[in-house]
Length: 253
Length: 128
Image (tube, rainbow over all chains, first blue to last red; front, side, top):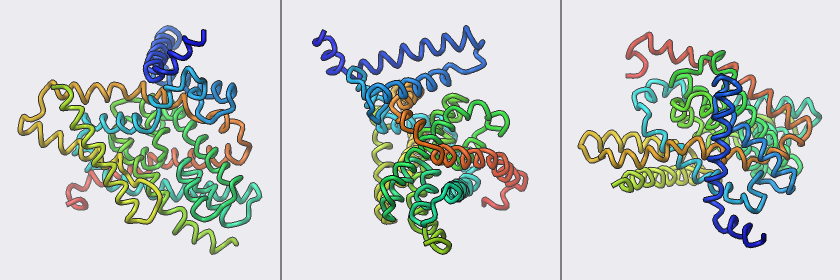
């Protein structure tokens, strides 16, 4: 049996393509038969992916979800940031530049507001949960932006590794919530046009969450949400350890 | 040839990422600032420019469209490699700080989107 699993590992990327294809086929079938297409197949597939990630993490104790299971390690390539970003960029091919320009100002406002609101709310929660030093409050607030902004901010201002771990977990929870929640609240927040999608991308910011949330809601909106969301993490890494940290430091030691 | 289209996409991707890296360096932060966003803008502009001059053939379109069709499978694979186990078992503070700020932001989306539509009603006064 050893040589079979070796074959899977050696051809990991191809195995991941096959496994993803099968997973999606089952998800779209379930969407059709069980929910009469009320819940989109893509949403079911993405949720199934998260469940697999949980199973992988529980079985191996690793941090790369299903990719920590040897024979499925190819998922790390297919689902890694290179292919994710490449696929996101390719969606811009169908995007309308005019629409992007039209929502440009709202997009920038939503980026700034999205970072400040997430940071502030995260900081207040850190405070309420008993953290009283500026470094920890700032790092957890940054984690409420994205799971990349959190550890980068924590590293830059010298937060403890325990707090940095919390900030990563905070960001991952946000990303999962945005992924699962978006299709359900899309109607409520009027997420059915390019402009709102750009504001949504700027407010939520988490690239993986926004990318997956829009894929599950309406793939046509992906490029608009992604174009603002991809500026969020960089901007967050700029603002959190500098301006926002200094503001927190005015009130706490 | 199909691969020419993929190459244009790849070129925009690399160029955009480079802009993002350089911008990060200039701002003295250890992160790529909007590399993907710049790449998307480049692709849109290059695509328009080349289509106008008939340099972008239908064959090349297929190369780019293949990748945008691979978008959802890639995102499904991406969700399968998230550290869901750690996130779910990370304790109250991460759960609260992950959910509450996101919910507040969700609720603010229609408010800001409405603002942008107001700009539409007053034609050309703000933007030009």
